[in-house]
Picture 1: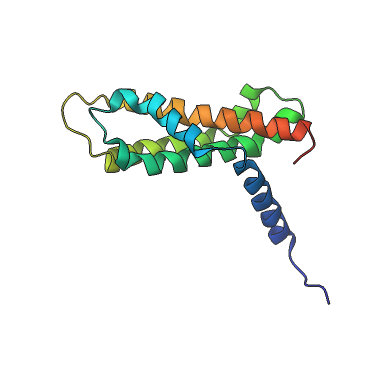
Picture 2: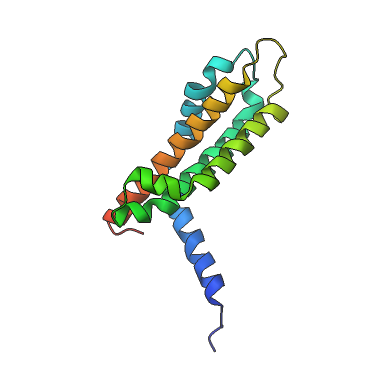
Length: 145
């Protein structure tokens, strides 16, 4: 006999399958390079080995968010319109990353500019969102979703 599963479970399984496929497009070396690019200027303020794991997590989360919303771009919306759709989720990731920096960054108290750190977090998250969006849209165009 076949097992009966709910529509909610089926959607969740499909979403997980899509995320696994999208994560194949992502490389850890690429993420670490981006960490150096975005947060290299804060090396005297923030300890890199401490924040690196969190930055990888936030990059993956942002990438998957962009990939998830890429179907709207495939359906004809511009990237800016699609980004407005997920503004709340993206802002939440940015705020969580900034809080992570404040709590686990082991910052020295001299010359800390919280605004610069927040802007760097914003840039980092949006950049990974954009990469996920572009790769997801490409997969939709190639009908690999």
